[in-house]
Image 1: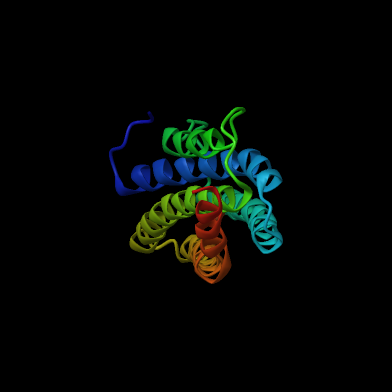
Image 2: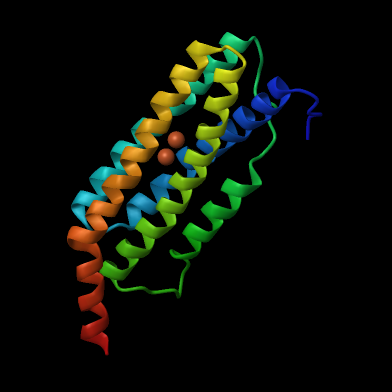
Length: 172
Ligand SMILES: [Fe+2]
Ligand SMILES: [Fe+2]
């Protein structure tokens, strides 16, 4: 880990963590999308994948504005979350489609909350450091992560968890 001796160092550490997290999501999300059965969920996740590519571009802009580069360090937190989510898809782990959809929502909401924690802190550091352009870019991403999280909650409550509950009933 790069040495942290100032709030700017801490901010760069946080931004590098987010850079790695977003990169890992872009790589990992397609596997989860491919395993989804519900059309609305699949669309929501595909849209969030496109948004995620935008998040990485915003981070590039933030680093450019700060005159810095991501450290290249792998975000172990996101690595763990992606490993957890892809465990659901492991061979021999045959989960009924409606239950798998509900489980994928749960796994992705963990990822969104991780991102929101990171963006919330990084945004605050940029604000304190007087980097208002960077703060605005990070705030825009934070808003999109929050919207994605809320949409997943709505899909779960309106439809997917109900179908998952029926799936339990069918096999009981
Ligand atoms: Fe993101
Ligand atoms: Fe996200």
